[in-house]
Image (cartoon, rainbow, N blue to C red; front, top):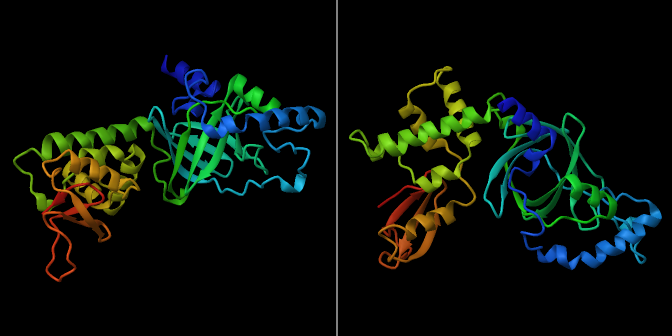
Amino acid sequence: MKKIIVFCLVLFGMTISGCGKTTGESTKIPPESSKQKPKTTETTSQSSKQNTNPAVKASPSKSSTSSEIPQASDKISDVWLATGKQDGVSSTWYFNNGQLTVNNVYHFSYTIAKNKDSHGYTVVTISNKEGKKHALLLKRNGSNFDGRTVEGEDYVKYLADGTVPSGQIIEFIYQQKQEKVVSQNASLEEMEHLKKTLRTYIFDTYMPGPDYVYAKGINWSENFYDNLTANEIWNVIEEFKKKNNGKEGTLFEQAQYLSWNAPIKDNWKELFFEDWNNSNNREDEIVKLIDKGDTVWVYTDSVPYTGEKDNYPIETVDKRTGSWHG
Protein backbone atom coordinates (compact mmCIF):
# COMPACT_ATOMS: atom_id res chain seq x y z
CA MET A 1 0.00 0.00 0.00
CA LYS A 2 2.84 2.38 0.85
CA LYS A 3 4.45 1.77 -2.53
CA ILE A 4 1.22 2.64 -4.30
CA ILE A 5 0.81 5.84 -2.31
CA VAL A 6 4.38 6.94 -2.97
CA PHE A 7 4.00 6.13 -6.67
CA CYS A 8 0.87 8.24 -6.87
CA LEU A 9 2.53 11.11 -5.07
CA VAL A 10 5.40 11.13 -7.52
CA LEU A 11 3.16 10.57 -10.53
CA PHE A 12 0.89 13.49 -9.81
CA GLY A 13 3.62 15.75 -8.48
CA MET A 14 2.15 16.11 -5.02
CA THR A 15 5.66 16.20 -3.59
CA ILE A 16 6.39 19.42 -5.41
CA SER A 17 3.73 21.12 -3.34
CA GLY A 18 4.92 19.39 -0.17
CA CYS A 19 4.88 22.67 1.65
CA GLY A 20 1.09 22.66 1.64
CA LYS A 21 -0.31 24.35 -1.43
CA THR A 22 -3.58 26.20 -0.94
CA THR A 23 -6.11 27.37 -3.47
CA GLY A 24 -6.88 30.90 -4.50
CA GLU A 25 -10.25 30.71 -2.74
CA SER A 26 -8.73 30.06 0.67
CA THR A 27 -5.68 32.29 0.36
CA LYS A 28 -5.57 36.04 -0.12
CA ILE A 29 -3.75 37.12 -3.24
CA PRO A 30 -0.53 38.89 -2.26
CA PRO A 31 -0.35 42.58 -3.19
CA GLU A 32 2.29 41.80 -5.79
CA SER A 33 0.01 39.45 -7.70
CA SER A 34 -3.05 41.68 -7.47
CA LYS A 35 -1.14 44.68 -8.75
CA GLN A 36 -0.03 42.79 -11.82
CA LYS A 37 -3.44 41.51 -12.88
CA PRO A 38 -3.85 44.22 -15.54
CA LYS A 39 -0.41 43.35 -16.87
CA THR A 40 -1.35 39.68 -17.08
CA THR A 41 -4.42 40.57 -19.13
CA GLU A 42 -2.32 42.63 -21.51
CA THR A 43 0.18 39.79 -21.80
CA THR A 44 -2.63 37.40 -22.69
CA SER A 45 -3.81 39.45 -25.66
CA GLN A 46 -0.30 39.94 -26.93
CA SER A 47 0.53 36.28 -26.40
CA SER A 48 -2.38 35.09 -28.52
CA LYS A 49 -1.15 37.22 -31.40
CA GLN A 50 2.51 36.29 -31.18
CA ASN A 51 2.14 32.66 -30.02
CA THR A 52 4.73 33.24 -27.29
CA ASN A 53 5.00 30.95 -24.25
CA PRO A 54 4.83 33.28 -21.20
CA ALA A 55 6.29 30.62 -18.90
CA VAL A 56 9.57 30.86 -20.74
CA LYS A 57 9.60 34.35 -22.19
CA ALA A 58 7.63 37.42 -21.18
CA SER A 59 5.41 38.75 -23.94
CA PRO A 60 6.34 42.37 -24.70
CA SER A 61 3.84 45.15 -24.19
CA LYS A 62 3.24 47.76 -26.87
CA SER A 63 6.00 50.00 -25.53
CA SER A 64 8.58 47.30 -24.78
CA THR A 65 11.10 45.40 -26.87
CA SER A 66 12.56 41.91 -26.60
CA SER A 67 15.84 43.42 -25.36
CA GLU A 68 14.04 44.54 -22.18
CA ILE A 69 13.15 40.99 -21.11
CA PRO A 70 15.12 40.28 -17.90
CA GLN A 71 17.54 37.39 -18.00
CA ALA A 72 17.06 34.61 -15.44
CA SER A 73 20.57 34.91 -14.02
CA ASP A 74 19.70 33.53 -10.56
CA LYS A 75 21.86 30.59 -9.58
CA ILE A 76 19.78 27.66 -8.38
CA SER A 77 21.85 24.70 -7.24
CA ASP A 78 22.87 22.73 -4.17
CA VAL A 79 20.60 22.20 -1.13
CA TRP A 80 17.71 24.47 -0.12
CA LEU A 81 15.25 24.22 2.76
CA ALA A 82 11.73 24.95 1.49
CA THR A 83 9.17 26.06 4.09
CA GLY A 84 5.57 27.09 3.50
CA LYS A 85 4.96 30.53 5.00
CA GLN A 86 1.39 29.59 5.96
CA ASP A 87 1.54 25.95 7.06
CA GLY A 88 5.20 25.91 8.20
CA VAL A 89 5.81 22.52 6.54
CA SER A 90 9.45 22.07 5.45
CA SER A 91 11.20 19.88 2.90
CA THR A 92 14.75 19.65 1.56
CA TRP A 93 15.36 20.32 -2.15
CA TYR A 94 18.66 19.29 -3.77
CA PHE A 95 19.27 20.86 -7.20
CA ASN A 96 22.15 19.19 -9.03
CA ASN A 97 22.79 19.84 -12.73
CA GLY A 98 19.25 19.19 -13.94
CA GLN A 99 18.43 16.56 -11.31
CA LEU A 100 16.21 17.43 -8.34
CA THR A 101 15.85 15.32 -5.19
CA VAL A 102 13.19 16.24 -2.63
CA ASN A 103 13.62 14.97 0.95
CA ASN A 104 16.27 12.55 -0.32
CA VAL A 105 13.45 10.32 -1.59
CA TYR A 106 11.64 11.80 -4.59
CA HIS A 107 13.56 12.33 -7.83
CA PHE A 108 12.80 14.69 -10.71
CA SER A 109 14.52 16.45 -13.59
CA TYR A 110 14.41 20.21 -14.08
CA THR A 111 15.28 22.99 -16.51
CA ILE A 112 15.58 26.72 -15.87
CA ALA A 113 14.13 29.11 -18.44
CA LYS A 114 16.59 31.56 -19.99
CA ASN A 115 14.34 34.56 -19.37
CA LYS A 116 12.19 35.56 -16.43
CA ASP A 117 8.44 35.62 -16.97
CA SER A 118 6.28 38.74 -17.16
CA HIS A 119 5.96 38.82 -13.36
CA GLY A 120 9.72 38.72 -12.79
CA TYR A 121 9.85 35.06 -11.74
CA THR A 122 12.66 32.70 -12.61
CA VAL A 123 10.82 29.69 -14.07
CA VAL A 124 11.97 26.19 -13.13
CA THR A 125 10.15 23.47 -15.08
CA ILE A 126 10.12 20.20 -13.14
CA SER A 127 9.32 16.79 -14.65
CA ASN A 128 8.71 13.46 -12.94
CA LYS A 129 9.70 10.07 -14.36
CA GLU A 130 6.43 9.85 -16.28
CA GLY A 131 7.08 13.17 -18.01
CA LYS A 132 4.40 15.08 -16.10
CA LYS A 133 5.49 18.70 -15.78
CA HIS A 134 5.03 21.42 -13.18
CA ALA A 135 6.54 24.85 -12.64
CA LEU A 136 8.36 26.32 -9.68
CA LEU A 137 8.35 30.13 -9.82
CA LEU A 138 11.16 31.76 -7.87
CA LYS A 139 11.86 35.37 -7.00
CA ARG A 140 14.85 36.67 -5.03
CA ASN A 141 14.25 37.85 -1.46
CA GLY A 142 17.65 38.86 -0.16
CA SER A 143 19.83 35.75 -0.12
CA ASN A 144 16.75 33.51 -0.23
CA PHE A 145 13.99 32.82 -2.74
CA ASP A 146 10.23 33.17 -2.45
CA GLY A 147 8.59 30.51 -4.57
CA ARG A 148 5.22 29.32 -5.84
CA THR A 149 4.41 25.89 -7.24
CA VAL A 150 2.17 25.69 -10.31
CA GLU A 151 0.55 22.32 -11.08
CA GLY A 152 -2.33 20.67 -12.89
CA GLU A 153 -4.91 23.06 -14.35
CA ASP A 154 -3.02 26.02 -12.85
CA TYR A 155 0.04 24.98 -14.85
CA VAL A 156 -1.98 24.74 -18.08
CA LYS A 157 -3.44 28.21 -17.46
CA TYR A 158 -0.01 29.62 -16.61
CA LEU A 159 1.37 28.33 -19.91
CA ALA A 160 -1.63 29.76 -21.75
CA ASP A 161 -1.80 33.29 -20.36
CA GLY A 162 0.85 33.70 -17.65
CA THR A 163 -1.60 33.67 -14.73
CA VAL A 164 0.18 32.97 -11.44
CA PRO A 165 -2.01 31.06 -8.93
CA SER A 166 -2.56 32.54 -5.49
CA GLY A 167 -1.31 29.58 -3.44
CA GLN A 168 0.91 30.04 -0.42
CA ILE A 169 4.44 31.39 -0.78
CA ILE A 170 7.27 28.96 -0.08
CA GLU A 171 10.52 30.32 1.33
CA PHE A 172 13.68 28.68 -0.01
CA ILE A 173 16.70 29.09 2.29
CA TYR A 174 20.14 28.03 1.09
CA GLN A 175 21.61 25.23 3.19
CA GLN A 176 24.90 23.90 1.83
CA LYS A 177 26.98 23.09 -1.22
CA GLN A 178 26.39 19.74 -2.85
CA GLU A 179 29.87 18.41 -2.08
CA LYS A 180 29.07 18.68 1.64
CA VAL A 181 25.93 16.58 1.38
CA VAL A 182 26.64 13.14 2.80
CA SER A 183 23.08 11.94 3.30
CA GLN A 184 22.09 11.23 -0.30
CA ASN A 185 21.96 7.47 0.30
CA ALA A 186 19.86 7.81 3.45
CA SER A 187 16.09 7.78 3.45
CA LEU A 188 14.02 10.50 5.07
CA GLU A 189 12.70 7.91 7.54
CA GLU A 190 16.25 7.08 8.67
CA MET A 191 17.13 10.72 9.19
CA GLU A 192 13.91 11.51 11.06
CA HIS A 193 14.45 8.44 13.25
CA LEU A 194 17.95 9.65 14.18
CA LYS A 195 16.65 13.13 15.01
CA LYS A 196 13.91 11.67 17.21
CA THR A 197 16.30 9.24 18.93
CA LEU A 198 18.81 11.95 19.84
CA ARG A 199 16.03 14.30 20.94
CA THR A 200 14.64 11.69 23.31
CA TYR A 201 18.10 10.97 24.71
CA ILE A 202 19.01 14.64 25.22
CA PHE A 203 15.75 15.96 26.69
CA ASP A 204 14.22 12.89 28.35
CA THR A 205 17.25 10.90 29.48
CA TYR A 206 20.49 12.83 29.80
CA MET A 207 19.65 16.43 30.74
CA PRO A 208 17.08 15.58 33.45
CA GLY A 209 19.11 12.56 34.62
CA PRO A 210 21.61 12.11 37.47
CA ASP A 211 24.63 11.96 35.12
CA TYR A 212 24.04 15.40 33.65
CA VAL A 213 27.04 17.75 33.85
CA TYR A 214 26.82 21.19 32.24
CA ALA A 215 30.53 21.28 31.43
CA LYS A 216 30.23 18.20 29.19
CA GLY A 217 28.52 20.38 26.61
CA ILE A 218 25.15 18.69 26.06
CA ASN A 219 22.94 21.64 26.93
CA TRP A 220 20.10 22.33 24.55
CA SER A 221 17.09 24.55 24.11
CA GLU A 222 14.22 22.52 22.65
CA ASN A 223 13.52 25.47 20.37
CA PHE A 224 17.02 25.30 18.89
CA TYR A 225 17.05 21.52 18.54
CA ASP A 226 13.68 21.39 16.79
CA ASN A 227 14.87 24.13 14.42
CA LEU A 228 17.48 21.74 12.99
CA THR A 229 16.42 19.64 10.02
CA ALA A 230 16.80 15.86 10.10
CA ASN A 231 19.21 16.22 7.17
CA GLU A 232 21.45 18.62 9.12
CA ILE A 233 21.60 16.32 12.14
CA TRP A 234 22.28 13.30 9.96
CA ASN A 235 25.20 15.04 8.24
CA VAL A 236 26.81 16.02 11.56
CA ILE A 237 26.56 12.47 12.90
CA GLU A 238 27.94 11.02 9.65
CA GLU A 239 30.90 13.36 10.08
CA PHE A 240 31.29 12.09 13.66
CA LYS A 241 31.33 8.47 12.45
CA LYS A 242 34.09 9.21 9.95
CA LYS A 243 36.22 10.77 12.66
CA ASN A 244 35.40 7.82 14.93
CA ASN A 245 36.84 5.26 12.45
CA GLY A 246 33.41 4.38 11.11
CA LYS A 247 32.00 3.48 14.52
CA GLU A 248 28.62 4.84 15.58
CA GLY A 249 29.67 5.47 19.17
CA THR A 250 27.25 5.94 22.04
CA LEU A 251 24.25 8.24 22.12
CA PHE A 252 26.15 10.40 24.58
CA GLU A 253 29.07 10.75 22.15
CA GLN A 254 26.75 11.55 19.25
CA ALA A 255 24.79 14.11 21.29
CA GLN A 256 28.01 15.71 22.50
CA TYR A 257 29.46 15.95 18.98
CA LEU A 258 26.19 17.42 17.70
CA SER A 259 26.25 20.00 20.50
CA TRP A 260 29.71 21.12 19.45
CA ASN A 261 29.19 20.99 15.68
CA ALA A 262 25.53 21.72 14.94
CA PRO A 263 25.08 24.41 12.28
CA ILE A 264 24.38 27.93 13.51
CA LYS A 265 21.04 28.85 11.97
CA ASP A 266 20.21 32.30 10.63
CA ASN A 267 17.26 32.67 13.02
CA TRP A 268 19.20 31.89 16.22
CA LYS A 269 18.57 35.39 17.62
CA GLU A 270 14.81 35.12 17.10
CA LEU A 271 14.77 31.73 18.85
CA PHE A 272 16.88 33.04 21.73
CA PHE A 273 14.58 36.02 22.35
CA GLU A 274 11.62 33.66 22.33
CA ASP A 275 13.30 31.44 24.94
CA TRP A 276 14.36 34.46 27.00
CA ASN A 277 10.85 35.90 27.08
CA ASN A 278 9.47 32.55 28.23
CA SER A 279 12.05 32.19 31.02
CA ASN A 280 12.38 33.64 34.51
CA ASN A 281 14.59 36.37 33.02
CA ARG A 282 11.79 37.90 30.97
CA GLU A 283 11.51 40.94 33.28
CA ASP A 284 15.22 41.70 32.82
CA GLU A 285 15.34 43.59 29.53
CA ILE A 286 18.19 42.86 27.13
CA VAL A 287 20.00 46.07 26.18
CA LYS A 288 23.01 44.77 24.25
CA LEU A 289 24.33 41.63 22.56
CA ILE A 290 28.01 41.22 21.71
CA ASP A 291 28.79 38.53 19.15
CA LYS A 292 31.73 36.31 20.09
CA GLY A 293 31.54 33.87 17.19
CA ASP A 294 29.89 30.68 18.43
CA THR A 295 28.61 32.48 21.52
CA VAL A 296 26.99 35.81 22.38
CA TRP A 297 27.42 37.96 25.48
CA VAL A 298 24.16 39.27 26.88
CA TYR A 299 23.85 42.55 28.79
CA THR A 300 20.62 43.65 30.44
CA ASP A 301 19.29 46.64 32.33
CA SER A 302 20.43 44.97 35.57
CA VAL A 303 23.93 44.27 34.18
CA PRO A 304 24.47 46.97 31.53
CA TYR A 305 27.36 47.17 29.11
CA THR A 306 30.02 49.71 30.11
CA GLY A 307 32.92 48.72 27.89
CA GLU A 308 35.24 48.34 30.86
CA LYS A 309 37.71 45.46 31.04
CA ASP A 310 35.90 43.56 33.78
CA ASN A 311 32.42 44.24 32.42
CA TYR A 312 31.35 40.61 32.06
CA PRO A 313 27.90 39.72 30.67
CA ILE A 314 24.99 38.48 32.74
CA GLU A 315 24.64 35.49 30.39
CA THR A 316 26.59 33.82 27.58
CA VAL A 317 24.49 32.16 24.87
CA ASP A 318 25.58 29.24 22.68
CA LYS A 319 24.33 30.02 19.16
CA ARG A 320 24.36 26.33 18.20
CA THR A 321 22.32 24.89 21.07
CA GLY A 322 20.54 27.95 22.48
CA SER A 323 21.70 27.21 26.03
CA TRP A 324 22.96 30.04 28.21
CA HIS A 325 24.80 30.39 31.50
CA GLY A 326 25.94 33.21 33.75
